[in-house]
Length: 87
Image 1 (cartoon, rainbow, N blue to C red):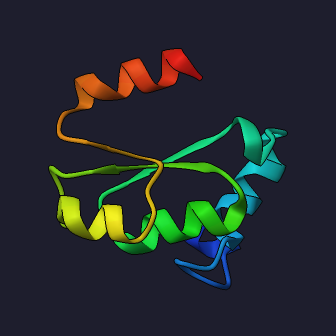
Image 2 (image 1 turned 45 degrees about the horizontal axis):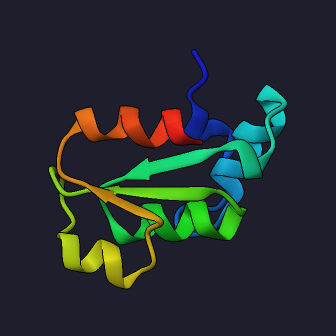
């Protein structure tokens, strides 16, 4: 069985993982939200041209996620629904 890692040569914060997924699914970066709990997740999404959402209930802190430039920072998954509905 193949894993997504089999198709990715570069890892976060390089945008390749996001770009490969967008290409495979036929989505545009401007219509995509990358959600992650670490600064490299946010940088990867931003480098790919997507909006980004940092979550504070993982490894990164609110301050780290804000400093790296997350478009949104949330404290619970419930908040994500509101962000998705707005966009």
